[in-house]
Length: 493
Image: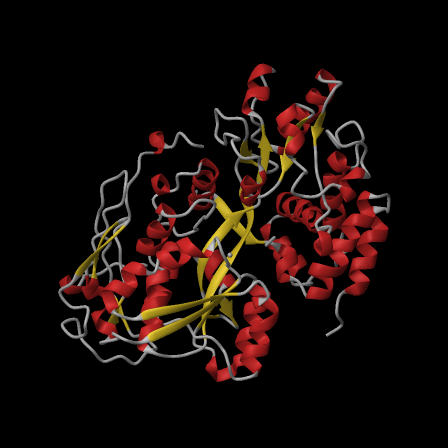
């Protein structure tokens, strides 16, 4: 039996929360020697009780065995009781290879976050970042050179990798299953599963359901952040009426070889809001056709903004300029007052000029893109998943560490522009206001999360005809012709 790596979840006072396409648990009796105390910054800690579960790793060492017994190391987020790893046996000197798309300079906080694990266990994590990892992973798997662990950024690629690896693909051990069940929930567990079996716990995440805006501009005009789609459209019309030197919205679909992907996000957001999560799932799986009436409605709802020359494209010109405006530049006119709102993900924070203050009282901030009514909160996003291709105690120990609140808080403290969907993450540890807002959004009990639809579709559609179709649509093609063309491109088998 192996016990789950557990961490206390830090309590936080919501009153203290003033900052506002491409990412541990059961109740029961804690074995004292496996308890992990987490003292996180900015709050008091409490123990999270856990029950033991059988692990697929096959380690027979008990709580008193192994190199980690009786040792504590200090992480950025608090002390780590190394005895939590004792049930995995003595893994000192063992190595775990990690393969990921996360490269320099973003790789440093990732690597640094492994230090408590390495100090506790004596195991070594060998990190390999490669921008071409997504295309090379299947090549390595088929060539018998799979990494121990891969951080996979799309559920579709996870499905392919697990099936390509066959028996070499290692399902999540019970320790990871318990963590995912408690700290992530069914939505995220589903995206990390293949044929109903959990293979990969979530790692990082991002939130796409945001509208960027200028708090100062809103305050100067006495505009309120909308909480329903009707309010958003009323605000859009009001801005167009009040300010003849600006437009309510700005957008950019150009992204080199990936041109069109920002447009797919508009459709996905509106599918979640107008059709609902269940129909969204059917659409992504092609259980309904791409040109289904529900998709027509979603695209036309987006068109009520994006194809209205009175509403776009602030700072750049007419509707067609959206196709040639780089997505990195899309929201920049907010800073000079020629645009009021820009739909884009949490990661867009990296595109504002150096010195731009992000926050509710800053130069720029974001609000949740409202649903049709305030009672529902669908959220679109993305993230990475931790898949394994070697069954070994040291690999399972590391996977368990990565799925714990301890790691999520450790990573948060040393990172900027990084978000976790782990419900044990303390919002106070996310110092960037947009990161904190993203975590708060993901942890909201009302949130219904769905992964980026185009990332889960077959590549011929998700990164092919869908992208191209959005460019054709914004430059004049009709909703019907675009959706019919994408439907015709869906692979027959």
